[in-house]
Length: 282
Image 1 (tube, one colour):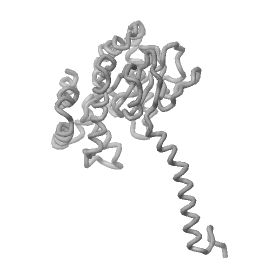
Image 2 (tube, rainbow, N blue to C red; image 1 turned 90 degrees about the vertical axis):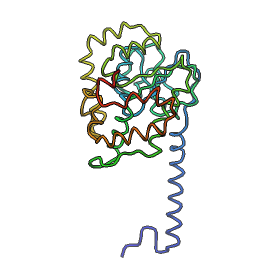
Image 3 (cartoon, helix red, strand yellow; image 1 turned 180 degrees about the vertical axis):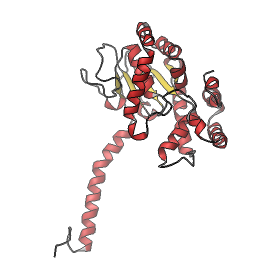
Image 4 (cartoon, rainbow, N blue to C red; image 1 turned 30 degrees about the vertical axis):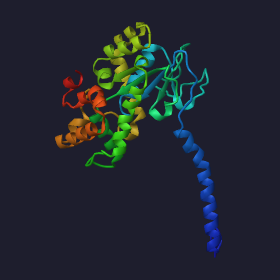
């Protein structure tokens, strides 16, 4: 008869299990702490921080910025950065030859709260309806029946706008996903002016816009294959809003408006309380 893995003594078994659990937690704790710590980056001469709300067009906007600025992208989590290595936030493939300071990407405000506000901040945003419905769909295993309107989710959304407002107005620029899809020339012109970048690369980009649209969709589909990828492929800016009832949309509007300050709501969010592509682009 085979002996039990840890022996016959129940008390001894519990002790061994406790010790193994303790060792596992000790190994896991530093990883958890590191992942939650803000990144401290020395003041950069012309640093650009790219903050993106998840599902707000990170891939497309990042790709457009990389092509039109000639800057490489680095994940903020990989500071300090090593030159002459492949980009850690790999949109277009290997790094492009560039002497410019990279654009540092972060998905969450807490990661960059200690970064000098003398650097420039570019943040993407999108209809809060589309974001919440998309997040809710990702969190359910079957057909969407209930929206995630928890206080935690709403607060996480509003945290981005509060953080953006905390940055000096002369050093911040907002990019709307809807404008990046519907009128990329206008959206990118604003950002390039903000970054004091020439527009020669923008003209080349616009001449090959359809090619880059297809490339961007392909890259996103490959990255999000396990989550279904893009369904509308940017053709419908209110796609997810049309998959739920008006009652659900009213619930989303009410939850966000009641949680946001009047200033944040009126300045950034109220315009998304519409039901058509044309209205959302106004």
